[in-house]
Length: 236
Image (tube, rainbow, N blue to C red; front, side, top):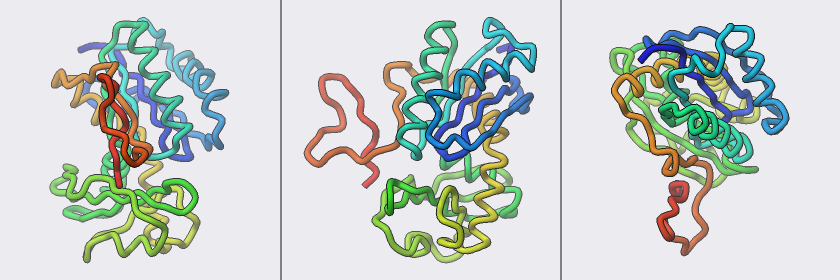
C-alpha cells in the first residue's frame, strides 16, 4: 500500500482529522472542540488539512474512522463522511474502536504494563466503561465497552485499574483520571494512524455496508439484525 491514510475520529468532544502513512506515522493532524458542529465543520477542516499537506484526495490509499462508543451526532457524521469518501474513491476502510484508541494513546503516560479503565459519557448521566491491558506497548481488551447507569465510575473498574476520564465533568473520576484523559485525547490521532496502518497492511478492511458505530443500546425487544440491516451493538 502506498499513499496516505485519511483519519477521522469524531466520537469525543474534540474531533480529529489527520493523515498517516503506511508505516503508522502521523503526518498531519488537526483537533478542535466540535461543540456538536460536525456537520458544519468536518468537511471544511478535512479539505483544509489535505490542502495544507499538499495531498489531493486522489493520492489517498485508505480511510480509517473511529467507531465509538461516543457522541451520537459526531459518530453519525464522522462515519458517514468516511464511508462516502471510501466509496467515491474506491478505497479500503477500517473502523477502529475509540476506547481502544484512547487506551493506546494513554499508555505512555500510564506506564508500561498498566491496566486502564477508559470512561466516556453516554448521554446525560450514564457512562461507557471499557477495560484494557497495556503489555509491552500493545493494547489488549479485557472487558469490552459496557453501558452503566450514573454513579461512581470507579465502581466499574477493577482493583489496580487506572481510570482514563474523557469528556467527563472535571473531578468526577479524580484529577489523575482527568490528566490521563487529556493525554489520551492529545494522542488520539497518532493512535489511529498506527492502528489504521496495521489493519490496512494486514488487509483487514471493513465492508462498507456492515461498518456501524457503537453509540447506542438497542431499544428493548429489537433484534441485533433485521432484514440484513446490522444495528449498533447493544452495550447494556
